[in-house]
Image (cartoon, rainbow, N blue to C red; front, side, top):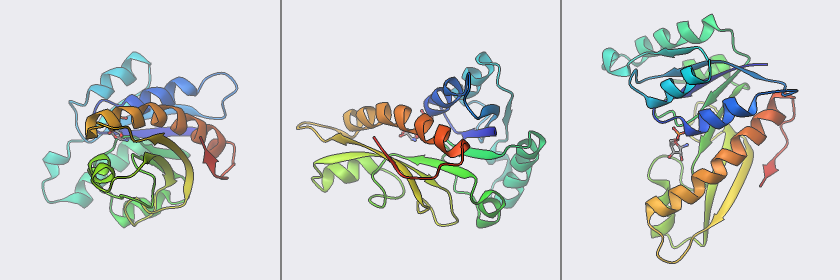
Length: 194
Ligand code: GRF
């Protein structure tokens, strides 16, 4: 399977995904693309010899469809079977999502369906939750709402801040996403709980 990964920033999840696709793994990374040409994750992808592309969403102010059309050209040129959103911070239109529905994954830093959207760790702390975590799900037109493929949990500890909790969750993201992708690329869509 050919996998394209979309990032917006540091790409730590992308790095783990690319590193996981070796040996007898059923997938290979064929592209890392970003909405920010300055995303440091692009350099990490280059260092791992993965082709990269960048389309600045700022160059398409107010023209979401135009931005997505430009991004789609780069994506389609690599003919991916699976699209992985990894720290990708742009909302995609239903038209874009529908092109990849059933073969597009995202990782979200909460135990969905709790806390779709942003500031998930702050919200979990404010709610006094005893645990937090991350979710890999299939992407559908509704934000952070598609079928859940995997979850990993962490305890919320006394004195946690959004940053300390985010760091603890990120460690689990780096375990969960590669494990889910390996199964997904082999056609296994059963729920993985770490
Ligand atoms: C992190 O906050 C992570 O929880 C979420 O996106 C952000 C950046 O991830 N998935 P990455 O390091 O760019 O993969």
